Amino acid sequence: MFIRLVEATVRRDNEARLETVYSDLILPVLEETPGCIFAGLLKNLEHTKTYISLTIWDTEKSAEEYVSSGRYDINVDQVRTLLVDSAEWKIQLSRDNMIEYTPISNDLVVRSYPVKESEKPLSEQVSSENSYLRIISHKVKEGSQNEFMEIYNSEILPLLKHIEGCKYAFLVNNSDNDGEMLSFSIWDSLDHVKRYEEDGRFEDFLSKISHTLGDLYQWKMALSDNSSPTKTITSQDIGIDKYTLITGKKFRQ
Image (cartoon, rainbow, N blue to C red; front, side, top):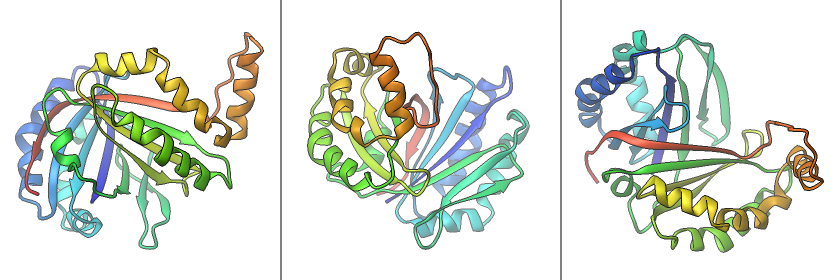
């Protein structure tokens, strides 16, 4: 299985128009695209002008053929005038499974990841009503990636999957991109996410892997422990983004 995330920021007062165009024009194109299992538009809950188009593919080859066929460019043209102009980078997996960055002229950020399929198809979990997607970016220090994955997969993931409201969770190894590891989870409601974050379980999980995170993150935590009023924000902070599914459709197995 292969997932592709296309992120964009919408101009003021164009949110409703984007959602309509995605539902009426973009989804039909993706439905007719070979290998596309699911497509959905997600809205960032904190940055409400930021959207992600999430597509799930049977293989990386199918996703590549979608781009090379020109269908991707057609879909981008449908919404280009609705988006904020900016200079961004395209992030994708190369043929030897390395992350590569190339500048692109449009205002989209593309991220692609291979994902191991589990007993519960991801397309079924994310396509249900009222789905909430939670993405955490961990910056792991050099040499600690294997330890991080071992702890996460053996001590965190099994417990996370059994927390009330968590429908699906998996880890993506994106360590070639500055040591990044991505944790994806899909939830029944925002209330379930808030309870998980506030009842101490998220902090317990974080404590298991905190020693594997970047040196700048460790320094910030040390300052916090010493009750320093200084707020230090670094690129190695843990980034948490939450999205709600606006519209989506499962096409085929």
